[in-house]
Image (cartoon, rainbow, N blue to C red; front, side, top):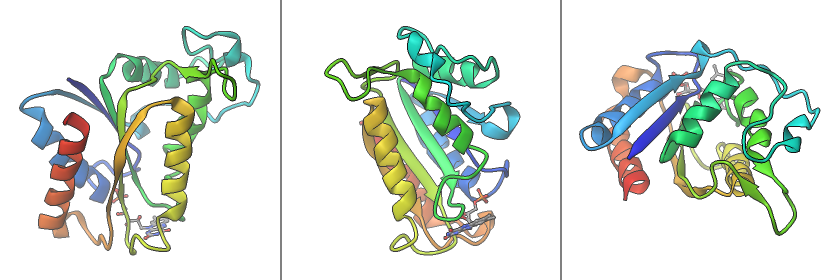
Length: 187
Ligand SMILES: Cc1cc2nc3c(=O)[nH]c(=O)nc-3n(C[C@H](O)[C@H](O)[C@H](O)COP(=O)(O)O)c2cc1C
């Protein structure tokens, strides 16, 4: 299985990267894993022109930036993990442009022909945050539910590590979350 992970934190070795690494190490022995750290890619905000909907068999985005490279990797992957720190109850601003640009992967939304270029793929959400899950992580989970339905992908769940302080302090709870994520995405 080819697993693509997308790290949406501005930090290369922060809390989210630490838990994501635990997941990657867990699945890396039996599966091929590629990580995209979003800060290494130039992804502009969606222009809302909807030109992309003129093409169904490829991402027809007019912006020829690194989003197209990422989409190519997503299309070729067997599973995708989106990893983000919780920023103001939502995705980080580093990964949000990529989320918006997903619009060019989808065709015929709202009709019986609704489809996407990554339709059916197992996907999961990994989040780290400083606060609790309850009354803190509702928005990001709602957005992810919307995106997965829009993409017609198979959501394998939301994996959230609450009360994070520093990467060094991420212990057994992080490892357990990573193991559960591994089970969900490969099982
Ligand atoms: C701009 C900003 C906004 C944040 N917003 C929230 C929030 O709404 N809820 C929360 O629990 N933590 C919030 N946090 C804390 C981060 O989610 C938390 O420290 C996370 O584990 C950082 O991951 P990272 O080290 O990968 O960047 C915020 C941190 C920053 C810098």
